[in-house]
Image (cartoon, rainbow, N blue to C red; front, side):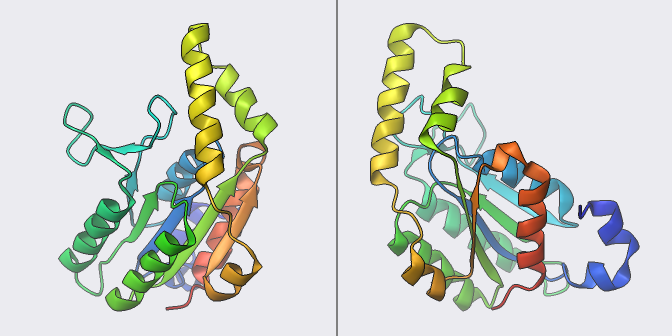
Length: 204
């Protein structure tokens, strides 16, 4: 397992994680993307995390750029990418962070746009697709203490989100630096290690 102390203690390993970049963690609701993004933010030596709320309380995910007491942005991927770009240019070449953007990124077009933005920023790029089976996702949802009517509404939101999400296919995978993960919550350590290995060898 790759952990932050081992990265910091090994200069040759630490050098592979310097320089920052744009690391997208996407996928449908309840696929483990939030869990994975949080752990990556803990492990990487210098990371900034932008994360959308995707708990199915609303039909679409939401992002609170100014805190949970302020207005939320719906379908926020474009705004989050703009914020990531601003963070990138606010830092000098020697101190740029790994910018982790956690949102659905449900279409190939949106993922291509993010990759194109990274190229214009001259930033390394990686898209991580975190998925789970419908059975596992609905099992996680069923653990929430909700009224039956609210549970039914959220299941409906889940089904619509799954219907909209377009998985990374072979053609997209050949053109997009990406890591495809299933069952993230079952073995989080293995998922994190797989992403870190890809991130350490990321290409611009």
